[in-house]
Length: 477
Image 1: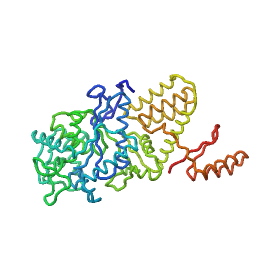
Image 2 (image 1 turned 120 degrees about the vertical axis):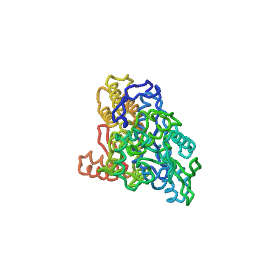
Image 3 (image 1 turned 180 degrees about the vertical axis):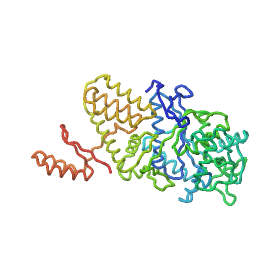
Image 4 (image 1 turned 30 degrees about the vertical axis):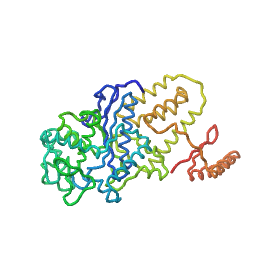
């Protein structure tokens, strides 16, 4: 918007409160987002979080802030278990496809950004690969070592969480309670060489009996970095020892983000980030989350193959607050697509409606103010959407021209391509059916007219009778 707005409130997971957002540097926001692990395709559950982060950035920029957005690309070090067991996910990709780990990483990184583009995600200012920052991670581990926070066991170099008095503060639990909770919920027996169940690997040693696809020399031995250490090293490299916002999914709250906090603060003595924001899961009803380990993923390409516009999924994400679970069904996605297409039809009508030039009315400014208040109230996108439909129903106090301009402005946040032209490519068979229906209506043969309407609907062509004549749209399936 140009003018800096100071009335943005965000829910901070660290304090468990909605807080007024105040950046470290006036007018500039430093924001780190945990990116994809590129051993396979990202699914729409993953993209629910990335879409939340995109909307956050758009809201910040809408308020006049410059956003320094950094996202990591995990191409090494993410083990299959949060308990520091299992194998590196990149090795799984190698075994599955018979390619090198580097080829796997390159292919799925490119696929991620192609899908991100389909969903209108803004590109991060910096997208940094873990494998390009091994030296930074080793240097960070050396600082932890110098400050007395690490120890070495057979499997690698570990961080001693008992030396951080407030370890796990992001979870709202104290150290003892968090350890007991993890022990009770552990699905595997934890390594008896570890001092505490919450201790985590910052450098994993390579197996002695085989060579890994990705491994490096270090002061402690040949191996590869832990998943948590990459985010700390790269976040601080590009944004400073303390930055404004750290984002991710709620699955990062119990382990990944507390570990990032602990190792960063152990190395620097400074707070890593002031605001921690997390998106809730996308679920298949009754809390069944979408995930690769659950084997129930749906990709952006899957949606396209079934005839959906990718931005229908973006619209669906707008209908639930980012801190609430989003229930995903084909029916809800179809409803979102229908709403999206209807919005675009309204935009086309508003654009084509000739009208004399007028200045914005008082009511127009009220809509703009209410919209800004909604998005600035912890990104309340469902409420912001209601103003769109309310605006379209406004008959007297807002001109069509102002409606169009307002919706264009709102779409800077929604990024739904509302001004996108609607292609009118009606099949010849449907054209003929619409003509026959019009003839039936003229002679008041309503039975035939209704039958043709249902026939058109079955073929995916929806029609509407208006004072200006019959209008139609194609319903993608």
